[in-house]
Image (cartoon, rainbow, N blue to C red; front, side):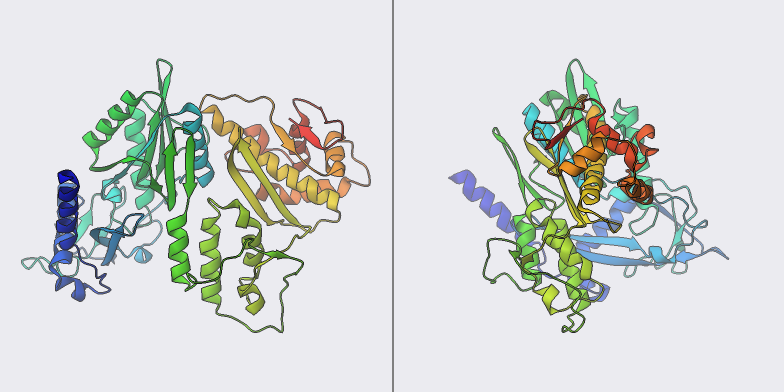
Amino acid sequence: MVQTRSASMNMCMHDSFLSKFEPTRVSEALVDPEWVVSMQEELNQFDALQVWRIVPKPKGKTIIGTKWVFKIKKDEDGTVIRNKARLVAKGYRQEEGIDYDETYAPVARLETIRMFLAYAAHKNFTVFQMDVKTTFLNGILKEEVYVSQPEGFVNQEKPNHVYILDKALYGLKQAPRAWYNVLSTFLVKSGFSKGTIDTTLFIKKEKGDIILIQIYVDDIIFGSTNTKYCKNFANLMVSRFQMNLMGEMNFFLGLQVKQFSSGIFINQSKYIRDILRKFQMENSKPIGTPMAPGTKIGTDPSGKAVDVRTYRGMIGSLMYLTSSRPDIMFSTCLCARYQANPKEIHMSAVKRIFRKSTSGHVQFLGDKLVSWTSKKQLCVSTSTAEVEYVVAASCCSQVLWMRTQLRDYGFHFNKIPIYCDSKSAIAISVNLVQHTKTKHIDVRGRLLEKDMLIPELEKEIASSKLKEKIKLLHHFSNDLDPKGEIVKT
């Protein structure tokens, strides 16, 4: 009881030093002592990490402006954790070839996060989480970049000087890439190897055990079949970077994660509450299905227009919610087709529609659902058989990507079943002989090739045409179930 009261008192004392007000201007922040402390802490990090050096303003060089961004950080329960003042560069002032060259940095797909959790549940080990403080400030710059002095903290002795950056600053176009290069180089030198197709996955195997690291910018999740290696990894990261060790993974990229001995469960209840509050729908009457059957949605040219920005915001919010809610994938993607000119019928769409040219497929890892999609196809099909055929090809591409990804976990699958409920599509995939009734599919395949193929697939897959990808549906086995309803690879 004493410990509980002490913890509560500490929380209250901590909370009393946090501001509940999020400034929109620097002038507002400078009159609040709590925000001034946060701004000074940010600049202290710059000095500690040797991010910049103050120099006389050079002639003929672009000086990139800076600005303060203020954010109140909250946990999954909505409790204020800390006030975060961040100094960012106005990256839109950068010029390609002068202030930056390459900007691409790999980012983990949500499917890889779910596969990571599925593997952890299969091996029955705990997944832990950490993040890096002032992440991008660790990235080493190759370009010569100058920024102005931050508002409210101008050096009184050198007011006309500027800063030259040795390391990246938030807002710079190349900042994510610079950070990834530093982190990946450090992990590789520490004995980890990158994933074959997902370069945000790092693996290390020792004496029959494995430790897995998944990176999403500054958020890191990791786990091992031997807890000793988790402790070693945490110590390794702390020795090189300033880290927040957050314990067991419970909140990641808007996903709430609960780990039990019986499995790992994910949901987005906090995110749902946030978007309901954002669009003033928290008191709406609940319904059982995302769309009711029997009603079609079209362009409705004579309908009353609605605010485009609000409609697109709702669609974007729902699209991220499909990370844990496959049941709303179809209806959300259907409504997303009308973002250019939405009408009242689209805003109030709660009805379920099935359209012939809508692709839908899901992938399981054992009994765990890890990937799904439902979207409009990129071409107009001339028959239902062709629609099912194209869907099967898209599903096959995703399965091949998953198979290659799972090799990094130590799994090598030779036979993967793909289920299809169209006898015509199954017959076409089994009988690859071209004839007049199917030759148009090969043309569609060439049109779809650049969009349907996943760049990270193996070279022999990446060079395939749609028809050749379908061969993989029965490459390992031509077995059909007696009713002709299952194609196995």
